[in-house]
Each structure stands twice: as structure tokens, then as C-alpha cells.
Image (cartoon, rainbow over all chains, first blue to last red; front, side, top):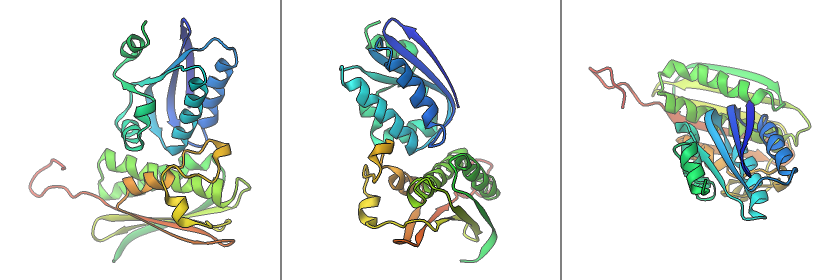
Length: 113
Length: 151
């Protein structure tokens, strides 16, 4: 799995590409935790357009980061879901915590950018 | 049910083999001519069962995971994922959505729920101290007669 990050003000945008499972979950977790540790992240937007696979281990790592953000009422949004990943989001209700949007602009608009 | 083809593989309970396991089963299932969606569902269910064997069955301390996969005459796939780890004390609880025995590892507790959602049947045989065997089946949709389009 490959992870890239960038900032729009205090919004961290994380692009994850490849497969998110138990084995690769630590990569995504490590990347986000490193940024959270810097203390300048308010919200997180996930770009999953390059993510071809995800299982419930991915849900676990996303829920963990969601809880971190909730400490300061930060939001987590996601866009670019491929059909399998979207099915997992809807089936598990994860989309109620991490809303799914069509693209980055839609996510940024929700966050008032 | 008559079996048309099958394979068995055994590999170390290491997380780097999760991807290997789901790809092998998907490659084998391709003989049934599944849709991409069906293949992805099979891959996800296999990933859940193998991850369970590694994290819960063997508690991340290693062991062998054995997968037996059969193609049956009714165009269905049967996948058995077996470990000889610690077993499951309370199976009913383990199958509940959102329940996890390892909240410390940020597990979502959705593994069995995902397997049940993506496969037609999921049955679990477990014996504390002896191991767990998860048997999943999925019928692959048939090509429509006289046409080239799949449902």
C-alpha cells in the first residue's frame, strides 16, 4: 500500500492506494498518527480512489483515527470509493461516521473551504 | 455435492500471507466464471477468515493456516479456512457484529459479519485449545442461456 499526504490549511488529505488489510493497516495508521502528533490537524479527508481492496481490518484502523479526531470534534470524510470498498462502508454503517463524497471538492465544501 | 476440482494449501500464519491467500482463492474461483463483484466478495471473505486465524487463532504467535477450496457441480465454491490455534470460547459472542476480543488491536469486530454478508453460508467448527475451522460457500451466478450478458 502507498500513502501520500498533503495539507489544505488544517485539513490533512491522505491518499491511500493499493490494498488495505490487517497487514497494511499499520502503514495508514502510522502515517495519520504521525501527522496527528504534530498537533495541527483539525479534519481529515481520505482519498481512496486508488484503493482496490479493503476488509474489516481497514474499518478498525479508520474507526481508531475517527475516535482521535472526535476528541476535538474534527471530521473525517472520504471520497473516490471503488464499488467493493463502498459496499463495505455502507454494509457496516461506517458511512454514518465517515461520510462518503464524490470528490475532493465536495469534501472541502462540507468543511467550509 | 459432487466436487469437480479442489486444492489445499498450507502457509505460515503471517500477515503478509493474507493477500496471497485471497488472491489464490480468487484465481481458483475464476474457473466458475464469476463477476468481478463476486470475486471481490470472495477475496474479502477469505481475507477476514485468514486474518482471524492469524490474530485470534494463533494470537500472532505463528502456526499453519490451511485452506481447502472446492468447486462443486452446482457452480458453487466452498472455502475452508482452518487453524489449530486456541479456538473460540464463546462462538455466539464472536459472531456478533462489533464484538471483538482484541479492542487493543483496533479490531472492528465485523469480520464474521462481512463473511456472512459476502458469502451464501458460513459455518464455524471450533474447539477451545484445538482450533477453528470456518467453512464458507458461495454460488456463482450462471451465464444466461443464449446470451452473453450475465445477470
